[in-house]
Length: 264
Image 1 (cartoon, one colour):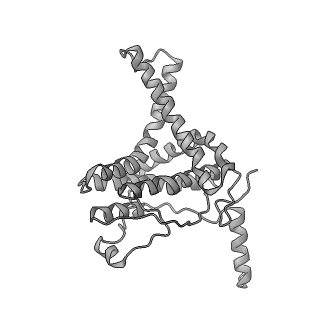
Image 2: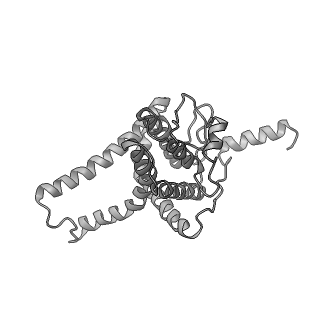
Image 3: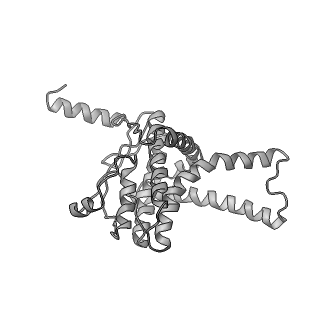
């Protein structure tokens, strides 16, 4: 049960929980969130692969920031600041889902740290027009990191409220407490529903049940986010390399390629 591939060129996904959750996240981000930002005309934080640029524009905006560890997301916002639009095309780049916990934490720490860096840099001087720019920067860049940082604190408060006499909502009218509970339930159900529906566009309905494990994935993201916050203060430009080719299929492909070249 714990050995399989990641998201491969024939659409096969891993049967281990981590890679299933990774795949759900990628489907949600690249098939839904980023195309939605494109349709809104909002700044689009770029992904790390399969980006096509006009060379003159890339030179004009200064290329990639060598000090930002998510230089792709930062570049997407800098293009928007200069008045350029990023479009999402109907194309797929296949990715090996990270199948090792420590490797995943290192990779996600870098992503969270880069999002914090990008948010801090672009929030200093917002030159985006209208609410769409603020939506992209604050919700999808800063919000991603800040939600992960806040999540364990909010869960702890909820547990304390349920298990003890601790009552941060004291003083609210009854309807106010009910509204808070409804917002909590509706928000979590909505995110779980989004995660469950994300893979349907790719015909991966078998992954939908993995959405029930998303709360545990959020806890992992929170661990990476707090680690990222510490690194932002101590090693802001440190790049923790992600090991690739760890899945069974990736190793088999590498061995076959080396053998075909007479190198193994």
